[in-house]
Image (cartoon, rainbow, N blue to C red; front, side):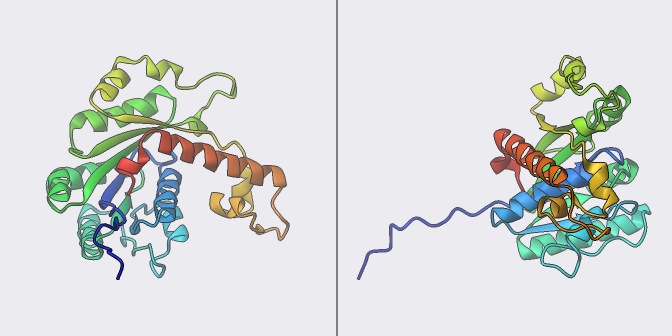
Length: 261
């Protein structure tokens, strides 16, 4: 009989709770979708919890009746979201699964939930290590809004990411680095010194054409037919595929294996 005592076992993945933080329309839902898809592709057990009342993008990609979705809160009140979060975390713990939480642009709700529940310590004690994903565009008011939340200390422990979404650039000159000023800003330097990991999220400049066809980015990448009944323009398909490849590469380069759900 063969000796199997020394056969290495596959490493287990430590569950994570990734919490999206940032204004609405900051690309947070899309970023969470990519991170969730990448983790699921690696074989990790992941739940995707869409608490964004105004933008149900994640729940369309990962519906509650599927293997990775959970039900959404019925409204955006603090009490409703608190109960929804408690139920969602209990489900993740029961299944020993990671969870991606998108509360949308409702930062007040997110901050109050985090502060009232002592979220970071609870997650750490439950072996559901937190990953806080802050999203910002290159405009100063975007960063200042996000920085205020980070500096408040509402989200403690775990790993903090700062996703720099170039797709929110208002200046049409794409030759310029929209985040050049930010990388020299003392507040940004202080964040990175504190361990925050910056991640570049490329601009997907054909997104409006994809949305006009009623498609998600992932449906465009898969070359699905849009609501017009015609195939999507091959250039938009190519651009979406390249965008996903580049963004995923940036995630991997910045150590996603360590903080991925």
